[in-house]
Image (cartoon, rainbow, N blue to C red):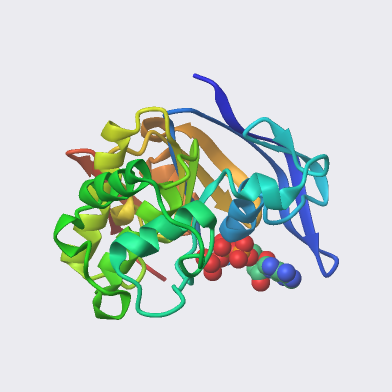
Length: 262
Ligand SMILES: Nc1ncnc2c1ncn2[C@@H]1O[C@H](COP(=O)(O)OP(=O)(O)OP(=O)(O)O)[C@@H](O)[C@H]1O
């Protein structure tokens, strides 16, 4: 499968302090990566590099074949599906229209812009995949947090990106909301087999069953990375979070039990 992301020996320094050190990562089409680490480990900073939001201090990052530093970051960003949980539409837009704004990358429907019937059909297909078929006409302020999160994923997918980045998409969701979100992400894997995803979380319970690879970050360094089954072991995840723990996987999903906490 083709390479979607390639980071080589990346360092990020902020205020004279190293935030990421010697991080290398290759993500291929069809792979679904989990980026795990404790608070402050550097996950969001790494996701910012992968989403062409920031440059590395040292090292190289190639996003969709374009090397950061050699291309217009704004243009490159339009080709990456970045689900920003802080995005808020301008006004009480309907779900279908929020999703369509993913094509213009705007908070509102642009005044003279009209979607083609194919674009509207695509928005409807995506809302269906994300479990929002019954809510296409619902207005943003009336949506639950989980429905908003899934709407934003559909929005990010409108320009048909090859890469989708998700920063803690299950934060603040109740159990049914989380399960609907994870079900929707697994459905995406089936409907978009070439899409690559990178999902940041602290919680292994929030990983979709379709997670194929994982990168464990600790203090800005990659502690382990590779196929999920090899990386997500109690021993390695325990080192990542500095806790003795046991990991179990059932039906593709992970559960964590902490042995004892000092
Ligand atoms: N622009 C910045 N200037 C200075 N320090 C920064 C900057 N951005 C991030 N940091 C610091 O870098 C470290 C890593 O931050 P980052 O947000 O990437 O971690 P994270 O793993 O996503 O954390 P969390 O799980 O809490 O969201 C933190 O200590 C943070 O305070």
